[in-house]
Image (cartoon, rainbow, N blue to C red; front, side, top):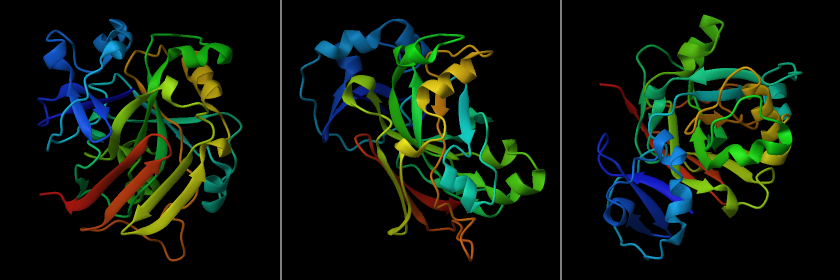
Length: 279
């Protein structure tokens, strides 16, 4: 299944994406919660599997697919070639940082250029959505805790990231986590560690990677994070980016007003965001 949230920002409804059609789940299940912690705890993924309606065509905004996650946990340097392009050491254990919820925006919403940082960059990433609460999760059990996957662009304000000598601010400006277009449930993907990832900026391919090249695979990441941190349904884990980011090119390439960034992951979909100046 492809789960979506659609509608005006702050007034989204849960739905199913059926190719180019949308099934409004609130019309079938008036009491269904938004796609987030309560949705997963109440077992709605299983409840909606029986939906057979074909849906209808709608000209409507798509939102990010998970409402109000308690955590957005990200991995740095989880692809060897990305670490190498920045002249960085390969990490011996997962390198974690966070993005704040204000970063979330829809798959086709604009990315805002912040006034507080230049050198804005792109990073296509596979994001894992947690579906069941857990702590000290073993690798062999990790996939039992996953609801599904989506595409995330870990937009980065490199000027702030490098000048601050830590990543929190540069990763957490408004709109710096475009996500979607849908949450694709785990049963839809046979091998999540063998998916092609790409980024195009203004029609030019900048990133061309594969999830098989992760240094730390998804079970390892979940085991490491959950050792001392309880994962809550709806939490997002973004698993790192392959090489091809803008800042490490010669000369560097950064996003500017009018740039269009398209991030895609095989079997999941594409997000496409135009860059605009913050008012």
